[in-house]
Image 1 (cartoon, rainbow, N blue to C red):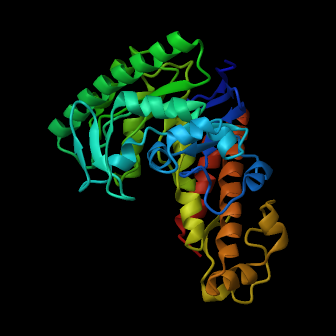
Image 2 (image 1 turned 90 degrees about the vertical axis):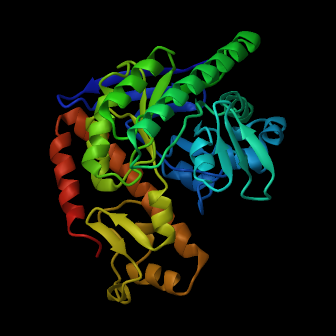
Length: 378
């Protein structure tokens, strides 16, 4: 069904320049995926995302299951048609959102029983159900249900979570393959998720067990949740060392601009994070010179663009003084313009990283970005 992944180039550290092809377009990797939780990237129209060159976005299974419902989306032609987006979509399993409802859910080997944060209704999310929902949504890439745990976690809890994650992955894979057998080739790839908290041997064990299930791609989950950055990198390296070289690798929920190149150097091809959109709504913008906290009084009369080196339509047209005024006045346009810029910044950062891999100077580029952000916000 027009799926493929090829590694076009690698550098000495292990960074990969690749190309992921889906039925809804080709994605240049490494790639950053803007988060479109409820079938929308907050504050942005799809036309803006297309203008920015977004090739793939992430949708949230938990939220779409509860509202408007996966069956309704299926009846309306699938998620792409429902949201009028003809480029690629990855959907998570909903597991992270369910596990974050600590007072509203109960975990068992069968699955997770939880109460909706919307109306209190009770639901059971199983590995099979998560796969079924995502098949109904029709996303290009679907994640299996895994057990997310808090960090730091005791070893026994982390070990138990790995065991359950593997068992759930086996069930999800079986459900998916049986659906493919019944219906012919499915227009979807399914990814497994490596867990193991901050225990290197558990990360290796999880990766080996999931590789045996022959997923189309693999994610590394349960990281960047409060542990030091060097530990995130260490655990990621443990997983990527064992994951198939010919398949895409996705590090979930990362990252900060100064950290992204580090993950790419470990062989990561895909990543997502709410940071650029969430920070934008809180008046924090990322620029080639570091973070800009636009509410700062120093920008009240600053007629320069937000980032003189940026080519996005916001920086071409609007001044820092005007953007500060919008936030001070509580105008909705403030979040729209800030989000547009931040998404552009992240996508352009990935373009520069791909270029750095091609020219063999990723380490130098990474060091330069880190230095720009070391000084802290302006």
